[in-house]
Amino acid sequence: MRIALIAPPFIEIPPRRYGGTERFIANLASELSERGHGVTVYGNGESRLPCPVRWRYARSEWPLEDAAMAQVKNLDHTAWAIHDAAPWADVIHLNDAMGVPLTRFVNLPVVFTIHHPHEPILS
Image (cartoon, rainbow, N blue to C red; front, side):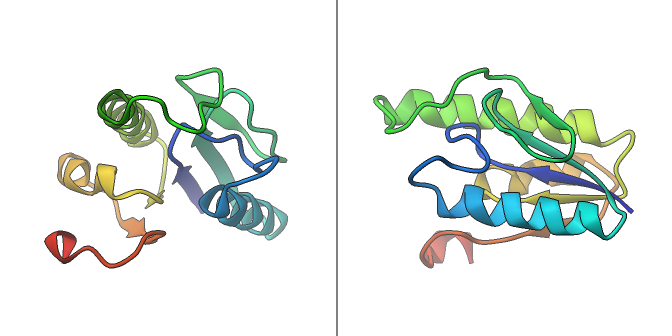
């Protein structure tokens, strides 16, 4: 199966320090690759994995200095990643709520792992 794992663009995968979501994605990508799946991770340019990594932003950025600009950057990264994965992937795995509304524009199965506390507005 060809799997696109889409991470937020702020922390390298696997993380050097903080980054529970990024550690989860690194472990999942490694395990799926070892089992013969074609995995591509959408992260940032500092990510180092045993599978292909695609990125729009070369550097990690944590902690975030400007929350509003971070949301714009995350939306840009996630929209680009979904668009890039659509022609080749069998499934898209999102790891951030930012991309959920964008999945209506692709005809692919989508998995969404929630890595944050319950937010009623997203229910």
